[in-house]
Length: 109
Length: 116
Image (cartoon, rainbow over all chains, first blue to last red; front, side):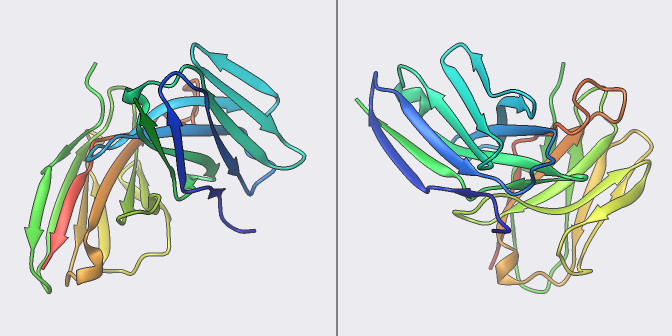
């Protein structure tokens, strides 16, 4: 497909793990990114992964990259209510950044 | 270290009017990109400015124009506003080649534009 694709909604219980999935389009992307957007706010760069890596761990966040399938995932361990937000995966497209539609993560206490 | 700043925070205009949005990039960044984020969607690329020139443009009409100043700050202008221009307008800055992650874009808080 032509678009970066994400599932739109994910709901988890506090303390569980969350996994947000993304399919990107350009196999030559150097980096792939995850951004977080809280209500009424701009986008916060959460983490990124270099395309020659399969996995990157950063505290509670784990990014997995499957280049063959152009699949990117973000795992949040021990999900907290403060993690409730919209999560966007993004790939650079030359000078711009292409985004998915975002996955709205809801964390229930 | 100040991040990307944008002004104003909110703006209400009527159809046919013109609007100017402003952005100051993160310290050390010289490239500014503008995005439109409609409700429930991901950001869509409008254009990017570097060295006071428009370097790349997304699929937006000529009603959308911009400017970059010598201090790297930028303006987004939208003429003849339509109801469909209501959105969150995001500015992002990035370092150019020589920075550690030249493709990485850092976003400001956005300007919420409502067109009535």
